[in-house]
Image (cartoon, rainbow over all chains, first blue to last red; front, side, top):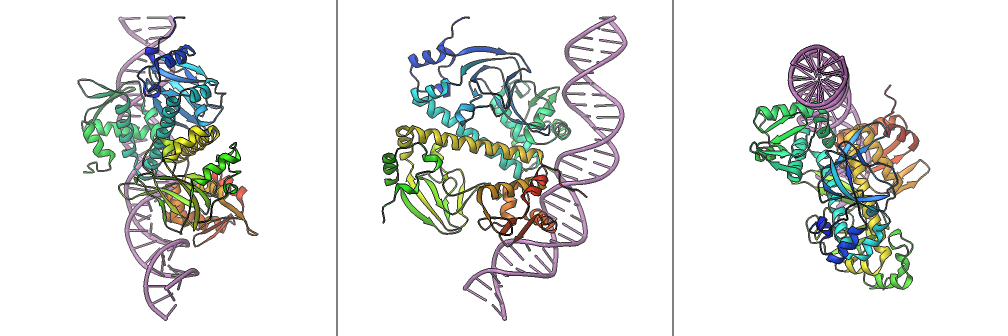
Amino acid sequence: MASLDRSLIAGLPVFDGIAAADLDRIISQARSMRIARDQLVFEQEQEAHSFFLLLDGHVRVVKSTPDGHEVTVRYISPGELMGIASALGRTTYPANAIAAVDCVALAWPSQLWPTFATSFPSFSANTYKVVGSRLQDAHTRVIEMSTEQVEQRVAHALLKLIKQSGKKTEEGIMIDFPISRQDVAEMTGTTLHTVSRLLSAWEDQGLVKSGRQRVVVIEPHRLVVVSEGRGSKS
Amino acid sequence: MASLDRSLIAGLPVFDGIAAADLDRIISQARSMRIARDQLVFEQEQEAHSFFLLLDGHVRVVKSTPDGHEVTVRYISPGELMGIASALGRTTYPANAIAAVDCVALAWPSQLWPTFATSFPSFSANTYKVVGSRLQDAHTRVIEMSTEQVEQRVAHALLKLIKQSGKKTEEGIMIDFPISRQDVAEMTGTTLHTVSRLLSAWEDQGLVKSGRQRVVVIEPHRLVVVSEGRGSKS
DNA sequence: CGTCCATTTGATCAGGGTCAAGACGAGTGG
DNA sequence: CCACTCGTCTTGACCCTGATCAAATGGACG
């Protein structure tokens, strides 16, 4: 196996403020792995043996309920940590993680977490921030679910996706991985039917353009208007 | 002002594993305060000058949306930390905190947080766990909002409240602070009307007993059944 | 005793879930 | 190269949960 280079992780927010020599130590203990599309990266309730850094691709994090519902918690983009059960004081993964496309990731054994946390104070501080911002995301989700109509929630979801993983094309901003109506429904607590109807309506109005597992936002600004509940109800 | 004693905080989960001498140092820097019912402990968007430990009473943490909706994030019970913006890498409070009853709390200046975190490793680890469990709570909320009916969510909310702040009486388990239909509605993303109807129905079935700002759960087990969506629909 | 707030309860109605069919398109095997 | 199949997406019809609107009741407290 080719040895890994610290340039892979230097410059990432999580490793901000860590000396080059330390980065070398950190990365020397990592294992690189590739995950094929639709493969599980880690599984809910399983022993959290490793934590991961996504280098390339996109990963969907999904919680399954006993009664068979699936709720998408978030999408992971390159440069983000995932499976950091250790940071939450857990020993098992809280959700399933599925590769939305072919992915490349680094993995460290979970035992290293406490070492990293104490040896590299900025790592500790940075991951605090990561967890903190995920907590805020989750609260935002709760608030959206409590106070917004489905239409607004779906609009918010698309805006979040293009902000996080948008890719400019000549048509507009495309979500950079395959995403189905069902996927959007699981992010917003609705059904694929409703998502389909909304996307169709928005397509008629020229707001978006979409197809099989593909969504392109043409007019982000007007989508923002919809997300704020001031969509033209004419 | 009477000097504070470490017995106030010894034995609390957050301060677990900290030496007595350190506890003295910690508490010597605290300021004790009482908050009258309905008073704000801290305010959304304000500079997070302090973090708090609730010694007695109950505090409601509420997020207000620009458009005037209020969503209750959680209730704080005695022994819990609150206002720990620092732990999330924030400088402002993310929500309003309102005393549900007259309260007593300790307050430390936020500047002390980093000191505590580095000086007392177990404090750091413990607060990690606190944040982690709040993140899980938030995800649980998201999942409930996505997959459950209002009836189940309200049942879950009451069960959570009696678990956290239940007080046994000869009638059943009472929620130990004044809580209105509106409050329950803000916890569950519904309206006071729906909550009122549900409580009335449950009272008819002998599940609960409730009055003005007062809820007593008579048969927790049957409430669990409702919360699981297997309520008798006869 | 009067005022204010929490609560109750009825009536109405719409957002969006459910059920049901088809259409479309991509990949597969003959 | 074509037929077939499977998964995604679309669209219509219907109906139910729970929000909204409206009004009255009941306590608590000054």
